[in-house]
Length: 441
Image 1 (cartoon, rainbow, N blue to C red):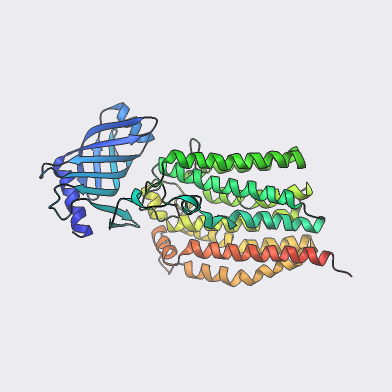
Image 2 (tube, rainbow, N blue to C red; image 1 turned 60 degrees about the horizontal axis):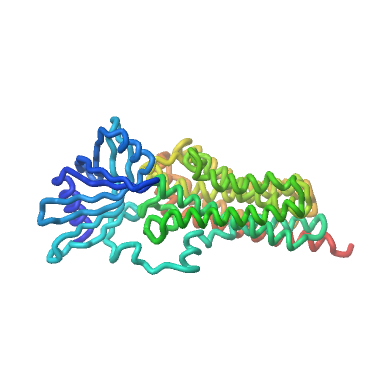
């Protein structure tokens, strides 16, 4: 059976049954049997139990089952619960559906998953995929994003060469602590996105999928994240002993900022502060922090260069959120684009991609020794091309249209490539400036 007929049959059976058993795992396993009806692809349920109401609000990710009267056919699934308009009413947005029953039925045991806004039949259950060891954890921590933390720290260390020698032991400690904090933040972000019902198989964003595909238990991801933060605290302790207590605010801001990005009562990501916070954490905090470790001081030039790098990181996050606006609305995530609208979001994106070049120019004006950094101008045409491609046609003023353009242009990937090229040229420019400083004459 093909996707659409199978989906229609499953929804018909759930609607005809009129009752659904739901389960949620929070502090304890919890189940309940509720009346239901089907509206489109949404399962609507209601409850008069305050305890059930409380659990559904706290633990929106549920599993559900439905026993039909049609030859003992059963339906199992996973979905996200969202509050409806009236008290005690909820909507279940399913993202995985399984129809079981007599083996003589062609559709028995078939698995439907919603991926990128389309239902697709999966060959097997997600947790049966053999992913383990290094390959698994590289995926879980988003290993491909490691340059986002490595490059700012290297740039900060290389800038310090202009003011003396670099202690490579301290640089390695800063790298270990910074990368550990970065990967721990990726893990804790996926953990809270999963627990709060933000990530599903349908998400367009770059979530790793290890949780929604049930390849690992959430507690294991949480434990790995805490291990990463522990490594950051350990390396930070050594750096404090070597550099001094003025370094403490950098380490505290890194660990707390990484956790509060999605953790706490209301994560920054869910409050429209995700773009700015990621730019700060992976720009000024890492670059200026690495510079401070070597020199025990902060200069205007280092701050300007760090802001340039941070703006590109913020642009990557903003590009993701512009593309994902439709899904984020469904998930009730208040990202910056959804709060400020299409035109302000596009204007801000323009600023994030163009202002870094001005900031680098200002840093060179303040410290003429940094003039090799002006070579980043070779990446300016790439930034302009991205903005031209993203520019909507006349009349395309809404976020949905902007999201469609961003998805078609693979916007986040384009900005990541631009960030990488910009930072590599910055790094080469810093190295060249340090060499020229010692050049005879």
